[in-house]
Structures are given as structure tokens and as C-alpha cells.
Image (cartoon, rainbow, N blue to C red; front, side):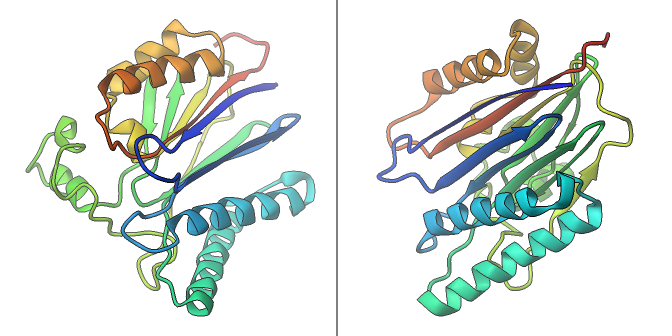
Length: 247
């Protein structure tokens, strides 16, 4: 099995980049993370870098990189406790979002906290998208707004969960019930990217591309054409799987 990956992060129109990303693969195993430091809180960049670094180190130290759902839950909770300890030390309310993907041979699972997203594509269709932990997404689920209106809703940035929050920090974890197959693909991104895209465009650019880099760059071209001065940080990771077999 081959894991093809591409990552990108930029400060966009902001003074500094509070996003952090990492994509690492070893053979048929990999860890992929996008974290967005909350701009309304001091040291958001420190929060995102700390979360990404700690989670990656834990994965690298995991025997044979063979994760379980319980390991994911425990490690994300440990990450939150680490951020809480730094808060106490620095007297700072640093917080961040999380989008995490893990691949272990035929197994894959992903998690999110906040409004950084994970998209999963299978058989040429968008099979699943993680749910945002925001007031705007609650309004969408209640039928008060359309999915296409999420990005422009005034409550989009009002998060209900984040890492570094004492109480509201629990992740949603998604486990792929079926083994990884040829053509499977994932997109991880911060809200600075997904708010300029719709699901059809994510799929269209995947179908037009043959590599993770090409897919990522097509998405970024769309975003760059639509952003305004002072736009948020931009971060994404694209992952495409090739097993050598048919889809």
C-alpha cells in the first residue's frame, strides 16, 4: 500500500500563522494532523504547535504505530491536559482545534475537536465529513440554516469544544468499519480553507487529480481566488491511498 500525501500551511492575511500541520508516513502507516490555534486567545500558535508535536511524538513512540480507539481517546485527553498545564504555567488561555487521521495498514480512523475538518472519500464519492463543534453547525443540524451558509454565519467561530478547554474538549472519533481500499482519500483542513469550498468542489478536484499534491493545489487555487484581505490562516493535508488493486 502506498500513502501519497501533501501538506500546506500559510499565515494568509494574518500577522502570524496560528495553524500547525504535520503529515508523516512510515510504510503503510501514517499520522496526519491539522490544528488551528484560537485567534481570540493568547498563544494560539503555541497551543496548535504543542498539540501537533505531542500527538506526533506519541504516535512515533507507539509500538509498531498500531493504534486503537482507546489509544486515540487517551492520547487526545493527555494532549488536553498538557495544554491545561501550560495554561497554568503561562497564565494564558491557549486553546486550539484538532483534525487527526491515523492509518495502520488496512485500518483508518480519524478524530476532530472544534471546527477543523476531516473529509473521507471512497468509491469516487464523499463518504463522510466530520461535524463541526460550533454554534453555527448546531443551527444547521436544527434546520435553521443551510450547510452552504455555515461559513458566513455569525456563530461559525463560536466553538463548543476545543483542546485546552477544561470541560468541553472531548473528540468525536470515527472508525472506518471497512478495510482501506484503492482510491480512498482524505482531506484535513482548518476553517480558513473549508469556508471557501463546498463538498462538490472537494470531490471535483479529487476526481480531476492523480496525486495528493495535485488535489491539494487545485483546492488551494479555488481558495486563493476567493479570499479577501485579512483572511484567516490556510492549512490543509491531502492523502490518497493506492493499494495496487482495483477500486
